[in-house]
Length: 341
Image (cartoon, rainbow, N blue to C red):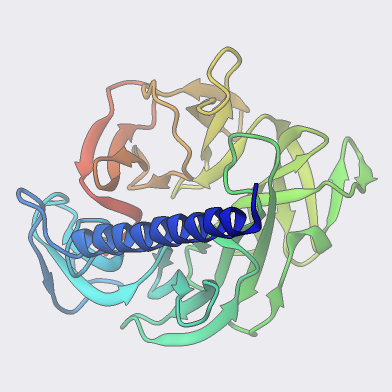
């Protein structure tokens, strides 16, 4: 092959690769622009005031996933009309939770060459109180019932809980003192009656007790997952039970809803929802047969709310917490709900 022919082939290859790159950028831009346009039949979304303040009527605040100019913004609907018209705030979050007038918003900063993330503490009017850089992709967020503590989890390696090749970092913030525990891995672990240390420790899915002195979470180590109870003053976590992920404590403090890996299910969709009675430690399987990769929220002491993939991102479903009934779609094109008022 002559040198001239080689140069021609190389130049052609460069042009083809450049064309492919331009096409990919144009297509991505087109798809992003499409998501900025409201879709026919979608929910009505208008800009307005969204408040996290106690009182003000029973309502839901969530990440709006409906296509249009307010996609990814915090939005609200009355709890009595969860799939009705929604009011958007102008504040964008990837993950969100709120309680007692305090919100935590895990958000993306797209100004630099590489996308970065922050945990932003919000006051009742959605104004930024403080912000903290995140080490990875946001995945879980919780505020304590009294609004004084916040927790968040990010993926720092991998991007799915379904497999085993991932690493997380979970942080706790005391809003009264400003003290930030950057990683729960700094807490002392008690497992099987002894102090435990291992390089492969990961935590995620924090849920706080009402007295704000303790929390529950998931610990993963040695290829297994455990429910742990954490003591904030002692800076310890103690394993309580195996094969329990993303716990969520009921408002009355007596039960934990969680997802559990069930043998025989596909590796990419291995979970079923259960509720654990903390007094008897008895598990109750719930009437949702689909795999739910979410940290559920309690709407009240009787009802759980969680997300499943939808046509335009995610939809919220409600389910009785006693094992009866059936799942019902609550809100379309929505994620990360907080029930307020």
